[in-house]
Structures are given as C-alpha cells and as structure tokens.
Image 1 (tube, rainbow, N blue to C red):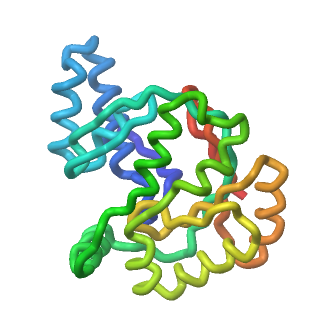
Image 2 (tube, helix red, strand yellow):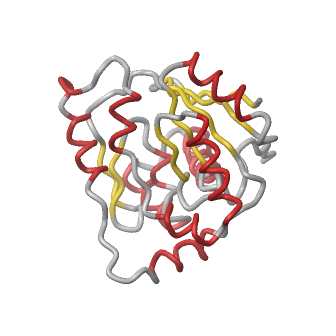
Length: 215
C-alpha cells in the first residue's frame, strides 16, 4: 500500500484514523464485501477509538470511546471555512491526559442542542454557517490553548480576522475558522496569509466528499 499523506499529523484531524478506515473499506471491497458492516465497525474499533467514525457515509453521533456510532437523519447544506496548521503538533495521549486531569469537568450541552436542531429538518437554514457558529464546541480547547501558547496565539489571530467561529480541531493542533460563504473564506485567507504558511480552504460537499484546497 502506497500512502500519500495530505492531512497533517498530530493536528486533531483524524488523518491516521481515516487512513485506517479507508484501508479496511478497500480490503472489504476487494474481497467482495465478505465482512458485514457491524463486524467491520468492531474491527475498526479494535484498531483505534475514532476509526469507526470514518466508516460512516453520513452524519453520525459518536459515543463511548468512539465505538458507538449513531447515524443522524439530516444532510448539511454546503459550508465554507479555513484550516490553519500552526506549525507544531499536539500529542493525542498527552491531550487526553490533560483533559482527564481537569477537576469537576462537565460535558457541554451546546453540541446536543445543535444536533437536535439539525435533526429537525425545519430548523436547517440555507446558510448553515450561522447555526453552526452558535453550537460548535470542543472540550479540548481550553486545555490545549493553555498548554500551547503558539496555538493560542494562532486561535486569537483567526478570531481577530473575523471568522464566524474559531475552534480547535479535535485534540489539536489545527484550527478551523468558519466562514459565511466562499467570498468570506477568501477574505480570511487574504488576511491570514501574512501570519501562516499553511492555510487550507475547506468546504463540505456531503455526500460526495470533503473538499480541501491548499493555499
């Protein structure tokens, strides 16, 4: 297997896990779907906690350590944004250890509220960005931003550039900036190219693919 990496490592983007899921699916296709979906998901969970997620072909809610996958009945309109890699990596095990060490940590409720609105198809606006901006959250963010000043500075710069919502990706280090539309995305890129050498324009195009353009 020849692997050409486009997703940065130690960035919180699930690059390794998505590669593992892709190999599982490719092997199953090669052998004429001999492994049933539930068994394939169990195999994926044995490889890594977030590998099962990347076997899904529609939006899902993930629970447990990543092995409990619940399909959600909605399709998102297209939305745009930027991904910035600040030039350093974050060790996933270290990030989880730091999160576990936070005393009296309570899970946020904004994500559940957002999913509830998305599952009610009447609540999904044509321009999805404003709705996503109010509901996206990441428990890793305060922990990682406190530990890594360079990532915190990058986060601050993207906020100042005018992104609708700026959020750490997974356990870091990549940062996502949500835009109103493609024009706003290009404006963010114009502002941020002074500060960052690695910026990607990203858009959802579900169910076809997730488009990435390196700047």
